[in-house]
Image 1 (spheres, rainbow, N blue to C red):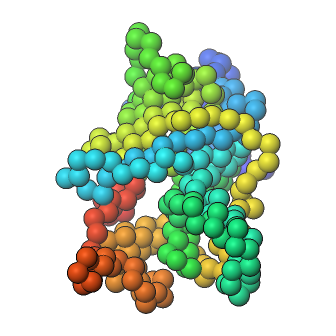
Image 2: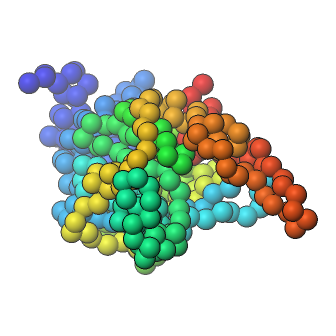
Length: 316
């Protein structure tokens, strides 16, 4: 068994002497220079000591995801049916519409790609949603991001999961969101400044996308540029886990390229902006990125605006 480092022994001694503590309180006890980030696996020891892991682990949270492709856009685009599945050790953030589409497609198509069940095919085409998929393994302190381009998947694996250094903002004012009492926190995280509202009524340290680490479920989040906004719509407990089993339907008949998260994010950003590059990646020669005008002519949309959730400046 690995011995604790001197810093880890100091932290555990604080808990023995003071009982449960929030991370911000613990950091205040250290002399300067204070640690900028904690060992993530140790952080989970702290969570167990604080008793902040929920007793009922399997939670499914419905979120709306609002985003803009550029700071000049006035209105948000929406993904209204995003899901967070959290079991105490892992979380998956994905589109419910895409999950249903992929699940029905398994029944709709045979192994040759021909329609085998017309009813399932018709049902599958009614569901839409982002093909992006985010997975966090809290026990290993890693995260992965999957980006799907038609029949090719670019899987960014084993990114180091950082602990957002949340500034928990005290307030005497009682606020509620979606029926839950909430508190405010702020942090610089993955290249953006985030403001979130969390509820201690749902004592899990998870949230939408890759946001996590508050002393309660994150129910609302927005970045400082107002490009991205998440808010909770519903919270339930699930009996049967979807993931990782649903990966079979998600990746069916696809070629998978395994690479670093940085490489995956770079490929995704270029593909989202450059339709020719997207077609090249997907091996597609159809009309993706084309609009047929009323007079029969075709306008090619070669370039699009796009802003990634992980700021590109973060990788520099």
